[in-house]
Amino acid sequence: MTKTTNFSTQSFRLNGKVALITGGASGLGAYYTQAMIKSGAKVFIVSRKQAGWSDIQDFAQANAGDLGFLQLDITAEDAPEKIVAAAVAKFGQIDILINNAGIQIRNEWQDFKDADWRRVIDLNLNAVYYLSHAVAENMAQHGGGKIINIGSMQSYRAGKFIFPYTASKHGVVGLTRAYADALAPKNIQVNAIAPGYIDTPMTKALQDDPSRNTEILAHIPAGHWADPSELMGAVVFLASAASNYVTGVTIPVDGGYLLR
View (cartoon, rainbow, N blue to C red):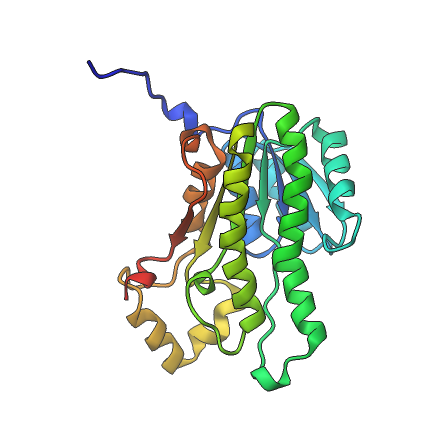
């Protein structure tokens, strides 16, 4: 006989949960923060600058959300311990970590400076490793949690002008799988999202280039650049109890881009 259980859509809710989001007040990070607040979570944002803080605070107030902030360079040697301590001091624990902060530097391969390589790898990969390690220790103390990393289409493809970024995003997928395996006994699920081509100010130059825009759209079966809100469902799913048996995967949210 098939075992029956009562499924509830409440398993997608994040009421009472605390989400720590790096770079959660600007760019796509602001949409992840909005998604967490809309789903009932409290959010602790860490960013190097205060860009977007007032806007996201206004959103939280309009949606009965609870926010905390810390201005800090997450690549600093003692940043993970400071971040965890600040988040726990504010909200008591950390249930969800979204490793969103990242940077892209573009150049011809022969013109890339060593300092630029280190800057990209330190933020996009090293900071993910160290902060995940520190947060996992807190999660393990109270029975589990969710770690969500942010990959890219360059987690799968080459990027001849952005190869430090490509290397870091390939690394994020490997790190996601390794942490998922290691942390499963602690009831910590580790997954990633790989956003496709999203309509943001950062991609405006590509969208305004007729040749590149046509080329990109030809690769997207859905036929359009994604609105940032189209990422929000995936991040809520991976943060919620609905994904408790999902770990070690990277979900492309790309309108089918990788199919072509």
